[in-house]
Length: 315
Image 1 (tube, rainbow, N blue to C red):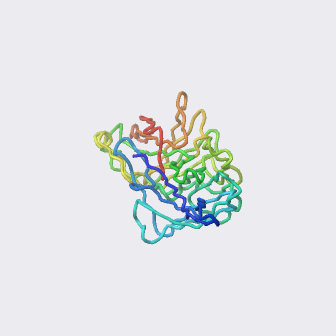
Image 2: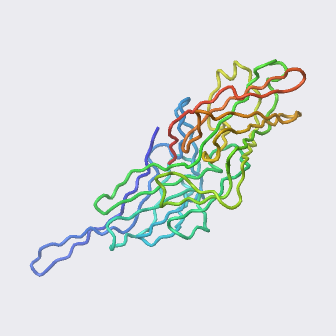
Image 3: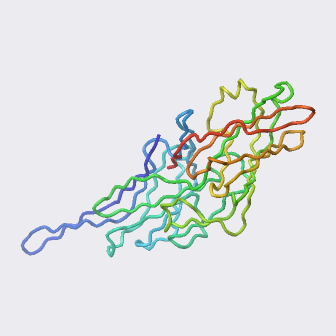
């Protein structure tokens, strides 16, 4: 379900009377009212189940800047009234500058107090993740509005790619199925996959960020799971607890290596050829990994690759 971020400009009508008693009206905006949808918010859309929902929590902060309004990195804080809910409304007293007809608002999540300029946001995509979307995601939006158009609809974008993993027994089920997977990692041939980055709102339309500083070509997902049987894999479902890795899609070109850390066993690595495929920003991917126990050792192969959605909507 695709939803919108609604921005309503608060306004007051001032009426003055001249000597001839002819009323003179002026439309003077006094602030900006942010309403995060009327239905589900922060929704990661997926084909399988129509959407996995990630709620706002009390204290979550978003950052907003507006050059024309001389606002740089103002924090919007989720009130306690919306703790654990999918709908959030925040009112803030950002004033319009009468010198400009258009005002462009740069909005991002999560808030970083060290950002001091309206056009640049610095943040970090962790190289070690816990598998839950919402803790290591970054989303942003740019909205331009005028006094004549006080309500603007937009959709926040995510510059990274989401990857969901399943490990399925493809050989001897009795020897493999049910074993615990402690972590999964991806190592890119190009990189970086994670680390410090800058989001430049001047290039927002490209939905790309620039990695610099401390970066990593490997992302590790610490999300315990069990190896499925083929029947369980065929009947798999997706919900808000499904482990998800978030990576920089620009970091993978020709191939990537996948390593699975199985409880009590030596880590297993396999390479995946990216010929004819690519990770793209704002997209979800499913990767099925086949594990087998043959001739006294585990082997691993990539048995399934699927781009689930061509668009991931976050509001």
